[in-house]
Length: 176
Ligand SMILES: [Zn+2]
Figure: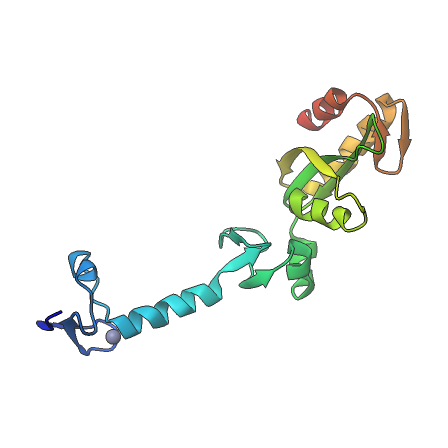
């Protein structure tokens, strides 16, 4: 392809922009005057600043945003434990396992899927399931309110596990 001197400079490194040499025409159409070299540097930098948890992109607005690739939020939190401890937002979730029919675990986590994956590692069947979740500004107080109310109305309870109809559990969490 023919090189065409556009008589413009890269707005980052000030080198002349030569079409099909160090510049692509779609960028010209977008009025983005960045040469190929500068553009790929920019992309590399952007990539380094992204956060991925279990392969999923996490936006910068997330309470636990921290650049890098992690297996789980808790994994990410190890190197910024303070941030993890001080962030109050999160979810209250209902977890089930087919081994315990009629029993529901009510817990809290920054991210329920993350927590569920943690449980799977302790089950040979990988059969824990998040049945329901709701976000709260303060996950700890929402969880303790839920536990308190559930203890009053459930048939039986063992730690964070409650023997009760799931609709009742959802009702309790929804009412917080
Ligand atoms: Zn440049």
